[in-house]
Length: 295
Ligand code: DGL
Image (cartoon, rainbow, N blue to C red; front, top):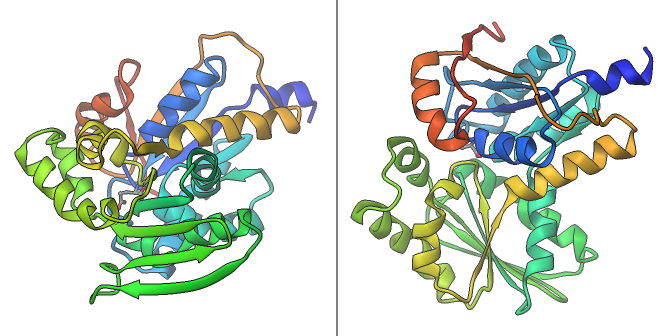
């Protein structure tokens, strides 16, 4: 195929549901001429509380659907799917695959002056330790100690020290339904955020990674709890930049200035996806088509 044809092919983006629209929004803002195909696996959301094996299987099926639509690159916009499935997808797909973890980890490392980073995400993302591993790899793998706190596996927060960085992680599962419900700045959201974040806040972090697609929707509430000295890292922006870099590096950028075509697919309830998704994506999301992926 001529590279000109490849350039005109769309970017594929997937998430367990609606949250990945925050990543798509950044991709659309940064590369307004790139066509996109988005798939939200709304029939099987949430991924965040599922096992590694299940998330890998779902990711493979959803990425297979996008590859079948002829996309030139796939963005795994879901943190949990990136945490568990990215390696597998990179191994099995013939097109480039970008996840959200590494871009977020890099942005956090750049942002911290104190060398103390907080990571929040779903149970799966936190359990996988993938942000910690990514930050550790960026720091030259000089881990000195890892301490676990908390009783339940997902409720622990890690304290991981490298030569230059200390990282604290915490699962915040209730942020996802709050964002979907639109309860982003009321008392329930604030109390939930305080409950989850007070531990990390007390550890003197100056950068906090919003390691879940839904958390940017609660940005103001999270910022209010963490205080003005803490930079919030939205991996959506960093991932869009990484996507542009990857396309440019492979000479696959479309180059059009605007007028991109956007297609949306879901595995359940297109009407709900459009109604709630508008809050995440803004204008330009008017219809979504129902599809079946996997068995
Ligand atoms: N998209 C998921 C993530 O970023 C959050 C929702 C879910 O648990 O599926 O981890």
